[in-house]
Image 1 (spheres, rainbow, N blue to C red):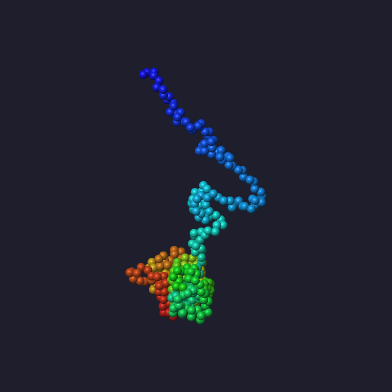
Image 2: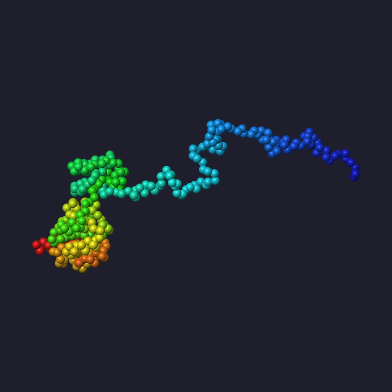
Length: 358
């Protein structure tokens, strides 16, 4: 019925639910609350006791324990905080660094100066047989001895040549060659004569040989050999753009470099002018010339014969200073001759013409 009281209180259920729990504790009294945790830290805090100077000196600051990160130690210093790994990569090394640079071996190899040497067993044997003036014999330690090594050592003992034993790596460093076969011969520098001395010793009619742009030392040695065979008074080699008398040239000359005077001139054009003042005709050898060496009418006079390289021939300035330019007659199937071969044919032709006059 409307307005009739049932006798039930709506808040009674909530009051019964809170019964026995008591009043709500303060925030500082609740163990899980932030205020309670702060109160606990404050009550347990003890101020650090000041240490005396003696206690400070007993324990250095570098020995202070660092908080562990939980990772096993690797024995390497950790990178500084905030520094990106690999940041130093590609940067130049600091002065005084003990770490070797990567290009140090290349720099040392490029700056090394190799002496004039002959390497290889067969090559050294032939050089000693040709009596090439040697300074020292280099032999690798632990070398396998065969007939060639025995002959090399016998030559060294008879001639009183110094023998030095080194490692194979040292032999390679001295010679600049990897296929040295464990033996090398250091050759003495060639003793050049002067152009003035060659002109003074020349017979009449004189015959001088010069080269222009011959860069192969074997060709130089072959030209020296031909010049000595056909009675030339000397060989003149420009210092620039030409090979010098090395061990290879000496070997190619078959000992002729020891009998024939050879001079190095600074300027071939100036040497030609001196030869003209001496009374020589200048003869150039060039395959493009229409005149042949057979028709050389001045063969019995004093001559200064010049040969150029097989590819380029005579230089323009040298060709202009020549009194006559001749070629070697040959069949059309062959384009050109080797410079040393052309010089040998020209010297033989000149020698034959002079013999007929005598």
